[in-house]
Each structure stands twice: as structure tokens, then as C-alpha cells.
Length: 166
Image 1 (tube, one colour):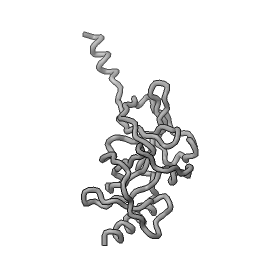
Image 2 (cartoon, rainbow, N blue to C red):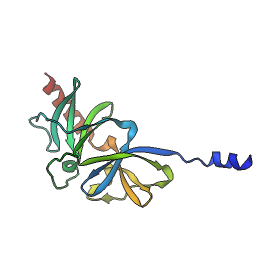
Image 3 (cartoon, helix red, strand yellow):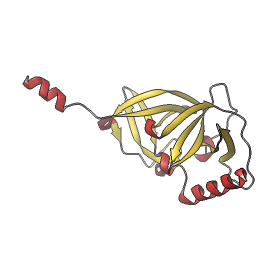
Image 4 (cartoon, rainbow, N blue to C red):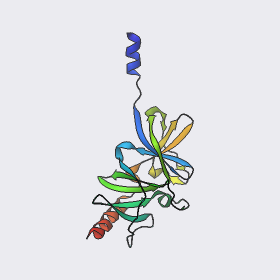
């Protein structure tokens, strides 16, 4: 009986992440922020939007701004493939679509397997990072979804979105 209680007390807290790829790197975002994963579709371009904002899509009546994570992180651009996906996540209560090269699967990472972010990973500054998780031998760069856009960019996107709707 005492052994069972010890085992109960040692249950690790697991974070569930959606795992995705940009180039050769594996990334993850907390599954609680993700609304859905969709195939890339026709994007309506917006004038005067930042370069990494590809435009907006209409997803079941919701106008959702689409950002290209490759461009946001200053990575080399690639053509879309059949594997290219848009992760629709909630950032500050608003849906935002993020274009990624592919989506892998849902992973669980024990909190004690998450290290603080290094200053830079694959050219991505630590401001966008939550940490680096270890799953077996694999390292997953965990993005801080709330910091993908600055406060100013969030306001700009909202203004652009409102103009697109009207």
C-alpha cells in the first residue's frame, strides 16, 4: 500500500503539445491554444500588412489573419507542399493562423523535461520561445504563442482585419 501511495505522489505533470515542422526543426505549441489544424487554402492578401502577414482567410464565417512562421522567424522561404498546414490558434482571445511546413502529432512532455529557452535556436530569438522540451532523444522547440506578435502588431492586425471585413 505504501508503494502505491509513493507512485501516486510521483505522477509527473505532462504538457500536451501539437508538434510541427518548419524546415528541419521540430516545434510545439500548447494544445490548449490550438483551435484546429487545416490545409493551406486561398489567402486574401491585405495592403499595408507586415511582410510576414500573408493575408486573411474566411473560416466558417470568421476572418482569420494568416502569418507565415518561416517569414516571421527570418527563415528562407519555400513553396507550399501537400504537407503545408495552417495551425489556427488563439492569441489574446483572437484566432490567428500560422503557416507551417507540416504538422506531426500530439506529444506529451513532462514539465521536468522542459528546459528554459537558450538565447537563440535555429535563428529564432528567445522572445518567441517558451523552452526546449526533450522527448526521448528528440528536442522540441516550444513556442510562446502569445509572443509571436508584438502588442503593436496585434493592434495593426486587428485594424487590418476590420478593414477587410468592411
